[in-house]
Image 1 (cartoon, one colour):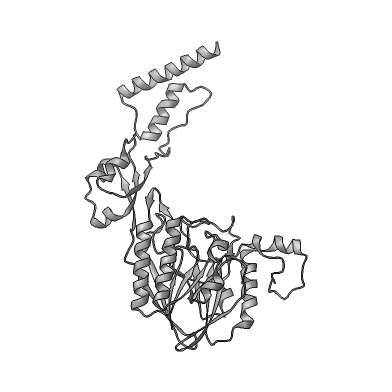
Image 2: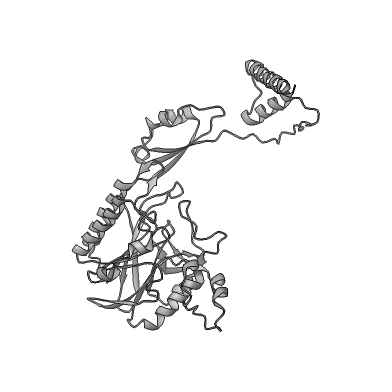
Length: 394
């Protein structure tokens, strides 16, 4: 059987002020065509379908159409909710959708469930592990450790993302009966590489889980992290990453995973590059240098962050650059910082005059002494400010 693994669509998301709706729609159209042309049996979406719990109507319609088109092509679909999704909204009709070959799970409602799907070459056990918030875990959730039961309140305090996911997997394992299995999980597996656009599951790194939790499965389709990667040295435990770039740190290639799984669970995995969507680009330099440069066609279609290194004030930077880079999303003013490593003795704050302090600050910030004209204006401004302070003190 053949599986297509994708995740973290974040439907409804924008990149700064730029809507990504058309990019997301283009990806879904491409992915559906790819699934059909490759004769995929099962499409897996490993969480964060939407970008927020109450998704905009446009995003809901986009997701519904994606499911409808896949189902019409005879492709089964397995979807879990992520930490961005409103689980109770997404899986509200899961029992009805099961009848159509679309399986959606969220929260703890069916934790530990094993769904056996039959394909032409044999059965597959599907274990769906949506984002599990430790604080929302039911009191009767087994810890799966075999240890003596502890007080309920203490157990609540001690729960972590690892412990609740381990409990869910422990409940599922005894029900595995097919020679092969596929887990779908939305979690931060320890050792994986993060991006700037991911929402932290917890503060301080306590949200990680260990890759060894998935050792009993033939393949684990992960969601949450936005970079495609394997984790824990396990080729069959991997993130597909986002289909589009959602931050400037995501300048890597985007892809989906195609998994050919034999009847005994052996996997052959292919990463397929996504040819749609706009890349991200960061350009750095003086404003005049950036305006003189001839951007490539790829740069012109990219979502652009411009880091401007002029030492002085730059006016209308975004408007001016937009003539060359139509999709300028972010302007960062980053004048050079001159270190004080030239042996210059710091001024004594007990005896320094305001003019001396201002001139030294100017030199440190701008990299050179103020000109004669600038010095006149600077000293006049300092004198005026001192006079106003003295007047208020009278």
